[in-house]
Length: 311
Image 1 (cartoon, rainbow, N blue to C red):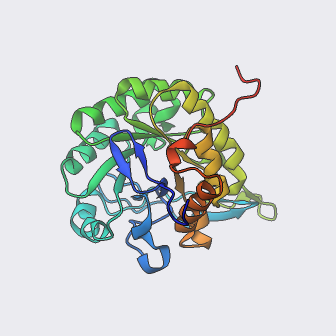
Image 2: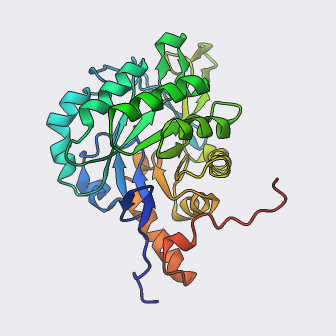
C-alpha cells in the first residue's frame, strides 16, 4: 500500500464524511474562528456550538476551571441564536467546505423543534445534533436525557420538523445509557453521539466555595476517556444505529479505540484548546495506522472489538 492511499472515509447513516474526525460542539466556536490554525477545511465535519431559538448570554464568569487531566466548564450555551447564525455565520462556515452538523438546544421541546424547522432545507447544513443534555425547564431543570420519555419527546418532535439526519447527543449521567439510546432510536434518531460531559465539582479550599459560580460543571478531557469509551461500547451494543464517539480524545490512538469499540466517527474537543489543529493531526495518525496494518479502508477497523468475557 502506498503512503497516503488508505481510505479513511466513513458514513454516518446516509451522510458520507471524508474522514471520521469531527470538531465537537462547544469546543470549536462556530467553526469559522482561525481556520488557518485549526485547518478546519480538512475535517470530516464541524459540529457547531449549540444554537438556541433566541440568543443567549450564557452563564456568568468564571466559566472554566482546569482539573487534573481535564477541564470543568459551565458556559450556559452562549450563542447568537439560530436566525443570526443562519444569516451571519453559516455562509462563512459553508465556505470552508467541511460537512456542517448544527447542534441545537432549548429549554423546552418546542424550541428544539422550531430550531430544526428553521434549519430544514438550508444550504450547507448536513445534519442536526440534538443536545438533549440541556436543562429542561418544564421538568424542573432535569436534563432531557435523564428521563427517557423526555428524550423521546424531543427526538420525535424534531423528527417531525425536519428531513435532515438527526444525531441525538447522549449524557453519561444516567444509570443505563443503552436504554436511553434505544428510546432515541425508536423515536426517530438517525445516529447517536456518545457522550456529553460528566457532572463534576471543584472547590476552593480557602474560600470553601466552588470554583465555578454555579457550582457543578461539565468535565471533559483525557480524564474521562476510559469512561466515555465504555459508554460508547454500551451504546453500540444496544442499538444498530451509527454511533459517534466523543470524550477525551487527544490522539490518533485514542480515536482508534473508539472506532474499534463500534463508533463510525469521533469528535475531538478539549485538546483543541491546547493544539488548535489536533483534530487534523488525529486524521493523519489514523491514516498512518491503517497503512501500518495494511488495511485499505477504515470500515475494516470499525467495530472490530474482540470481546473477552462480556455477556
